[in-house]
Amino acid sequence: MGDNGLCVLIKQGATLIDVREKKEFDTLHLAEAVNITLKDLITRPDVISELSFPLIVCSENGDSSLKAKQFLKESMNINVVDAGPWKNLCDNSSSTLDYLF
Image (cartoon, rainbow, N blue to C red; front, side, top):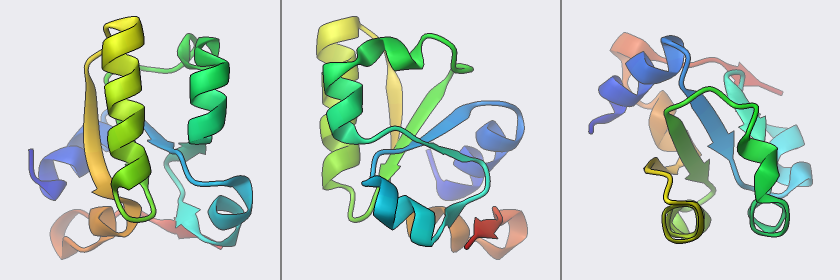
């Protein structure tokens, strides 16, 4: 799925999970994102029970989001979309998401 499709899903209510550490997230993130670190996701997977599906995960460079996707699929049988690096979601000028500083 392309970035434009991901933006549409997010704007329609899908949950965007940013798995970066809180300090990185607090510095700059997408307004639509919720911050659940990869560590929290793995040690407390119940944190996703109140989120809207589908779930989309992103991270700094794509490595942690891939790990999050694999964890959710293998341990909880949840299909997740891996958006890769969070900044990629903002590159499409026709369907941009908002930054929060």
